[in-house]
Structures are given as C-alpha cells and as structure tokens.
Image 1 (cartoon, rainbow, N blue to C red):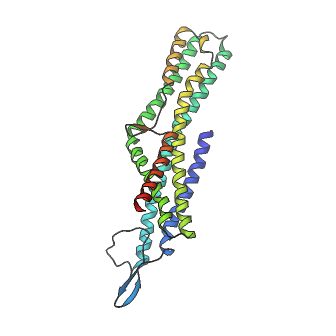
Image 2 (image 1 turned 60 degrees about the vertical axis):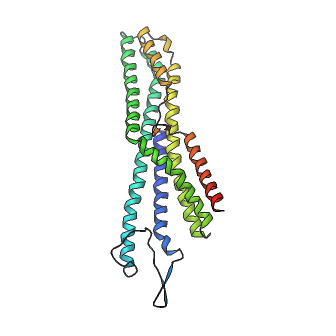
Image 3 (image 1 turned 135 degrees about the vertical axis):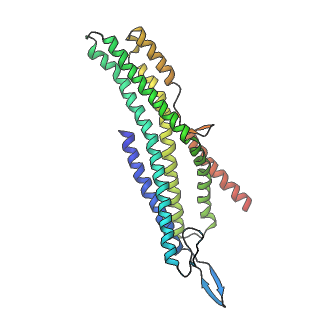
Length: 279
C-alpha cells in the first residue's frame, strides 16, 4: 500500500540520518578546540568525551577506555531513541492503513450489490457484510483510543521539547564558531529533527482526513437502494464517521499539520527571545 511503502522509506531515511548524527557526535571531540589547564607551570590539553559523565578513573590517563565506553553508551541510547520513534511511526501508519482498507471496502460495497442482486437472501448478506465493516471501524476506533490512553502524555512531552530542541540547535549556529564541521553537524541534526516531526504530524493528520472521508465513501455507494434496516445502519455509520479520529497530545491537543506549524512558530519565538535578551 501507498502509506506502508512511504513509511518504509521514511523509516530508512530517519534511521540513516539518526545514525549519521550519532556518528558525528562521537567524532565531535576530535574536531573541537580542546580546553587547557596549567599543571606545574605546564600547559596541558584536556581531552573531552562525547558525553559528559562522571568517571571513577582519570579520563586523561585512560582516555581511550573512557571514550570507547562513552561510544558504547551513546550507541545504546541512540538505538533506543531511533527505534522507539520508528516503532511509533509504524503504530500511527497502521491505523492509517486500516482506514484506507476500510475506505476501499466501503467503495466496493456498491459493486458487490450489483454482482449478487439476483441471489436469494441478498438483504441478509448485505446486512452481515455491512456489520463486518462497522466492526472493523469500531476496531480502528478502539485501537486509536488505546494508543491515546498509553501515549498521549508521552506525545505531550515530545511536543513541548521539540520546539525547544529545534531552537537550541538553531541557536548553536549563532553562538559557535562557524566552520564546516559545525555547520554540517548542526544542519544534519536539524534536518533529522524536522524529518521526525514531519513523519509524526503528517501521518497523524492523514488519519484525521481519512477517518472523515469514510462518510463520503459510503455516501457514494447508492446507500439509498438498501432495505430500511441496512439504510438506517449506514446513516448511523456516516454520522459517526463525521467525527474524526485523532491522535492526542495530552488532554488538550491533537497531532495535526496545524500542530506542526505551532512547533515551528514556537521555535522562532524561542530564538527571538534568546536573541533579544542576550543582545
């Protein structure tokens, strides 16, 4: 399917860029200007690590041991973050794919009627078939409700930190020395962050759109030709489908392209606040 194929491409793109950012972060200490310290009237260059952590050993004497362990820790952390995001992408796309399948089956409902109109008990067949479609719709609703119950506060925290993180990354270009490695590292980090946010909020916005489109899909099937019982069921289905399915951000927001624009606006506001207060 279109969304599944696109999700695979987005996952590979995000995975690649996520590991590029991690690799650049591990190499960053070798390209930065190292601090110095006066010891016994001699200037000593202090080696730094990618991650600032406490060590029970002298990292200047055992630098490569500390560095390799630091890279190992960073690899585990990067793997957890990247794979968690990819899993969440897929959970959202799963709901979107199920909605597209249901949309297709609703549009095919009218063609099934033309094919079996001459059979006996066709009304009973259509009733059972449509009941199955209603059950599929209810399963999708329960799936999104379960996702929201488990993840809405996680997505709230993610929403709050996204704009701050984007602003912080952008501001690094204003305060750090401008050179090729710094620009490349910050640019790659920002590009990866934007990919991540676009995948989240574009797919979530598609769920809103596709869930509302179900009513129009059913409306175009000559539903008025059904018997009274099936017709009533279809009317109730169309009424329910007009209430969109949404992935929530905490108790007061939803994941949509409008929210994505809000994150970009907040990023700009944080940047301007920093520039005005520091200038």
